[in-house]
Length: 412
Image (cartoon, rainbow, N blue to C red):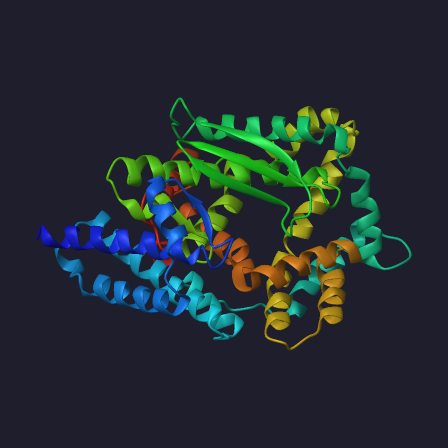
């Protein structure tokens, strides 16, 4: 029995090396690494070719599949399944570098371990009618919505203060349920020229850099979203728990590296999005925004409930983004059609629609992790019961263990 954990250790070490070397061929491939510096140095000095790495990933996956799960304990079975999923994704991503073109759906299966079933766009029409009643008047609905939302822009000179306060509250609420090491911390940076709205760069030792992109004005409904998603209980907490419970406590080296295009991202993005509602149930978010964030931004707190109501309706439209992205990536619609559809269903200005499509062009099927990932995490955690303590406990567990998309489907 002892030989199997040893074999998984060997496979894990090879997986880390494959990931680091693949990162030399794709700059964004390695989202985080906090393992031995000499491993990264070796990968940089002499990376194997993409074709060789693809073969190495396939061989490492075959070795992992050969490990008998029947003689492993629950956590180690999870480790084996995690490595198989991550290596499957590595093989697929490397194949894409050598010219293989997957459909959107196949790419989602290979990279993120899920079957994506898009919703027809007409399913989003009823919410459009609902929003029409909220923002009546002449002109296109997207324009009316955009003009209304622009009343809630956080001034650039107040953005850092608003974000610091938002992240601090997200942290306070998370800390009430998830213990954190004393050295835990983050720094905040405002940046520009990025295809995303926010990003977490995990540095190891419970430390993150959280970046907020200011290419477009940041609206008030994004402050708590970004604070939870990038910080608490989102990406910062997820990486911190993996480091604390798996890479440090158990010596499982595969959790010292995070490849962006992998099933790990489905859990990362899905839990980060669901973490917003977990941290701020019911109307607690609107109350906090009105009490703390609106005054910091110099906005009228009396407007908070109306803006929150519109924001909740707009969230119902999020699935349309993934349907549009699928058709665009697969070439069924062109760029101008994709922008027009985003304006219609997501109610974006041309500028924001173009920014959204820039993300899709860059990250392709990755976009499903935000929606499908959140749906899977939400269903899984809420099956644990209505009690907040039970839900937070299950959230902490799936973020602290080698969780796969199949584990989320299986329930708590």
